[in-house]
Image (cartoon, rainbow, N blue to C red):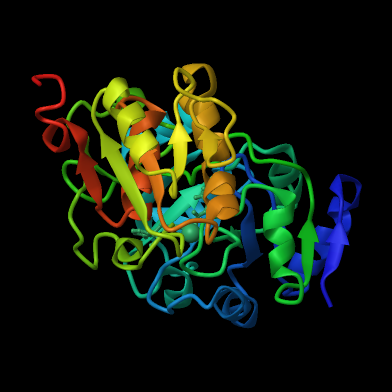
Length: 332
Ligand code: TXA
Ligand code: MG
């Protein structure tokens, strides 16, 4: 049986975690499915509930910087600076793991991802001092949950769910691997490349699919069942394309949005933050409702990089370039 808890029942959530149960709780990025890292049976329940491959490592969540030294060693100076600057917040640091982090949690890697979330509910849970492994609380392969109705789909699969509204960021944390030289961003998030540059001038964005570097990148991620196409090109061309494909569902920038049944308002008032917050809910809502979903390509700056990363995955690389498609449109 799954207990449904609210923000006033955090002590119950902590009890369940302490005794080896699984609890879904909100973080500022997405809801996480947590269990204590020092209980192999509890960790096994995470993999079972998500249908997650055993070779995909888990991020460890902590409530205080002092816990880092139990999890990691050989910690570079820049890591301490980043913790000061960005924790609590949506930045996960990849460091060399100690023996306290089991192979089950790290999926056999010599490294561990560590993060200190800022959501008040997550903080209250982690104030217990527990070390909590928490992947996004979705079945493996579907979009991460950012709202209460998303996590309710996990009723029956976990011991408890703390229902506490919407996640403010809406995209998973930035994963920064500090064990490589130069350090590399394995997953872009709300702590952006531009935010990290002053601390790590040579930081790179990893685009490969090397298994040992980033186990998660091998799996089909964030992809709805309905095919998604990214649309590249100027707004007037987007408008023409939209008129020619009335059977599709369109994510529409504010300039063109008209409150039609096949239009999702994307980028309200041009805000990439708002688009990020809504993305996974939008993808869930439109999935299965049309033959295709069309989404405009966005500017890759700040959180726009994270947004584009998730969109490219959702589209599995499908991009339609309208500048090519309509090459002759304005020449006639
Ligand atoms: O925002 C987040 O990070 C959320 C919330 C709940 O904290 N958690 C999350 O966890 O997104 P998960 O498991 O859904 O995604 C973690 C990603 C996976 O792709 C995994 O392969 C990768 O991070 N990862 C975890 N540990 C790693 C490590 N030591 N080295 C490289 N990649 C790692
Ligand atoms: Mg995930």
